Length: 398
Image (cartoon, rainbow, N blue to C red; front, side):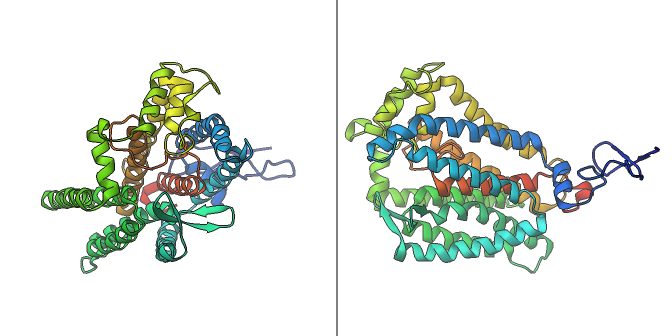
């Protein structure tokens, strides 16, 4: 039986497949197979996938550590949070890998339609939403509480990248102004909840993408000045913001229970930690399974795991950036930059808050903290990043 050499593709190395005949091997999942799934298999960055899955594994281990004590605190089944997170993780993996199949064209379409849908749901939050800890950010769907703003972040990054790129391609299209208007609409909806941390994140994503799109230094200065002015006004006019900033600047002036316990967790964990399940501080932290899960990592697994988690986020950002080398599609560059900024800023804010490096902010650690909306929205962002980082020979859309 003769062997037939496959045509050399525009990327990678050639492969050999069996030729015709009754005993010939099928060409499925070889580079001769042009199906969507086969093309995805050969173009996706499996190193990036592996890094993301390691984060998922670390997150599940930490939920196993922090979940039972959080469940006992509210008098539900010990494995309540663990069992729910298993479902969230399974759904997140399906969503992430499914989104990574999309071409740039379908990614833009999904981003635009999804963002419009999320804006519609956000408009309903003040009317139908449930108030938790002084904020109305969630809509109850049976036993699941949906936080629409979580999904708005990655979708906003995709829409802004499309608008900026379209503005460069079609000079008469005011892409920059439309993107700025969408930022104002989304930011206004988030402030009404109120959620200033989320507003800060989407503003930072917008700023990064605007800068990558060729924004002059003058406008960079204006954006930074506007952000500083907005933060100062929030400090002056909003008691909740004022309290958190004052507590950070003068810890003795107010009760610092959660951050005090968080710092104890890192101190007692040392380099290698107390061991899995041996942490004591998690039973004293009301938000140990969500906002302060990094503290649980510090106490039970020590500085080593904390550095590994931080290193994984850094690696994902650098790897996705490296995959852009030679990229000529402006939308892909801007969307990747925005998603990297989104994931990195959110992770940095959570970890810095737990370490008392910045004022405390109720923000989850992507793929690590418990939460359905957070886990699924992170999976959506990561799936988009995987889709954008796929090899596109000669700059063509996959």
